[in-house]
Image (cartoon, rainbow, N blue to C red; front, side, top):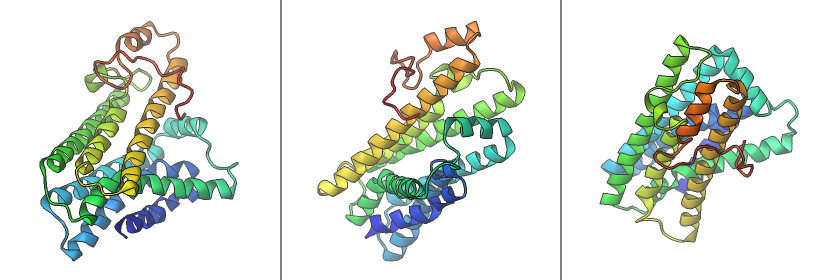
Length: 265
């Protein structure tokens, strides 16, 4: 029942994608996650099922979703170059038929519910607090901080150097630290549930949501790499940076995803 409720919440919020197709996976994503977190706090708070760690994780979902959704909304309305890039990278929806829009809507809402499902199932299964839950919450918080710091760093850098490649701060560690932060966030969520998942369905939902968001983040890193390869093709500094800096995972010499056509984007 709890999973169905958060799925319906995600459906309602992500419906903003019917206004602009890309919002299914951008603004609708962020605010859907925030809505799921708020729903968990209200629903299980009224039923007396919240523990300290689940309340913290639900609150982190709200923080994560509001920060991401708000950041994307502000960037879209303030940055004409960002809107142009996203319209070129992803269909703006003008040619997308209604059946495909409906499929995208339902698929995205289901993904968002599955991503948060380890927290949902911990509450639904009346599981207490354990070391795994605390560890997962800590990893989740670290991911949100990392992603927020990366976005802030890039935003400040671009204000001063609008046409230069951002390679300062966390961008010295990996070329896509914001996507790394996203993966770490959902790794924490997934880890928090591994001791309490009950039955095949709960495992499928939790694993499916986690693997899908990781796949999407790797695809986003590939899409960014392809765009930068065109934009900075003649820049020797970019070539050195790309040749020596991992694209997504620190300390692992995976420096390019351009040939990984199986990734989204």
